[in-house]
Length: 503
Image (cartoon, rainbow, N blue to C red; front, side):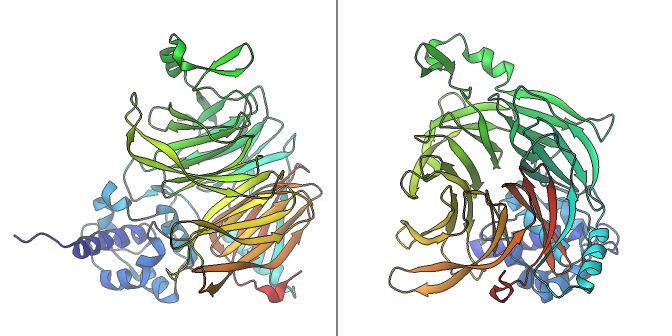
């Protein structure tokens, strides 16, 4: 028997891939096991929007038309880890929502240990109605304030999405869970010696980073869905006891004071999750790598010369932003393993230098433009002097500065992406909206530039955090902004906003 060619093998995987993506969203599908539908049509029209590589982009009308008619839920049971190497479940949810496909909360398609396999993003009908009502009598079609949520005792420091919930944490040590679509306060939880600096969600778990240099792990209680129970603290007791007796596991953090290398010595400022790993960046200048399966610390990297302020992890690469004015790019070191854990070690792959003596506060990326497959990878950084900077990886693999614009009057504190729109939040109390300008530069093989397409104002304090929702609502998307004024604001932003809507 002849072996399958790579193209045939990829096509086979893609068939199962596309089938699995849209199965959960069809309420009128045929009996389980028949596995029928226009598979070839789905492959040709939708595959580009759900592959793991590349940016998250709105699907075409042809893709949506085929997705709505898909009657192939039985193929979900064939979704394996191999298939999940090619598909982004997050993109699948986004495509389904964009196309207006309804599905039951908790529907699954994927392996059990894939944290994204629960398709629990309900379409926010109430928000859609609110948007339509607001926009009916409005002359502007750029953005609108939908709601102002209050309830925190301190300034809001970080945001995260978890299925149908929006999580916000504050410097007052409390975490609030808001439920979509009505954005009501669902529950509160939190603990610790210091304020909450960062949070990420993985499946039914929430990881929170604190000023007391600890990471806490919360899980939804089996007895009550609105109770989040503290289940562990990193480093775990098991990890600590396994290393505390050996002197070589201690590192000098200051004169006459040592700590285990698995412990952070200062506030943990940021968290990121990728491929079964959680990364933590700290004011102690180190980047630590933890394994989600057993919460063990695998690696500690002396990453920067000053505090780490931001982290992003994507496609196996980690980007760290620091007060030393640099963004560093970290990749896996092929062939080199941790002697005790067997995991791959990380190595420095690039240094993106900002302005001298200026802190780099936020990092976002990589961005691949409008998704036509011809753009270079781009990473953005937000600096304390108000500059937005962007670097692209050229043909030779070298990073080059292609964006350098005075974006805000004061420090940029946060960045967030939605499709081809970049959002920047600042200490000047404003949110700027940007679009990539993909004019080709034949000299160096780069596409440069970025255009400001809007400015959102309304907060009474600095914008500390931004989070976009994958839901497509009324021809736009939802943007959540958290501020030092203790409020969480919900905005609707048009996906068709252009420089003609400049404020």
